[in-house]
Image (cartoon, rainbow, N blue to C red; front, top):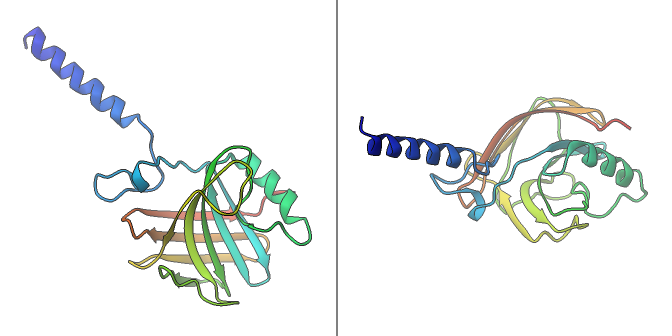
Length: 188
């Protein structure tokens, strides 16, 4: 191999390595398109919030786990609970993926419809939002999941203690995320 060809091979290798090490996202884009217009979203925490005896929310957030548990414990202890929970206000801009299901049991397969959240006692939805500093309501940007096989499988549920299962979410813009989860409540 001549030196010009060798430099090209090394250049191609370095370019592909740099592209592979670029911002990765936990959410898959549509085809070869990056998710949500180029947003690289990497979740650093997962927590479960039980607002009542028959409801639960699973949240994946970009804030660190220790911060999520500290803030969740602080705000969920207030009476009434902070408006906007289960999304938590944070010192930095962050993304939160929220999956909420009322009347949940185990084992249970819950389908999610785009734009249909259900009524009181039968609420079910999933969505992702980008929240500004200190904000847990009115996201700067948001997208709902539903339809196209979007579902939550609850395999294990101990109300106020633990939830486990799998979610498969599809967004109307083509993004998707599928994950197994086993989440214990944050330690007090």
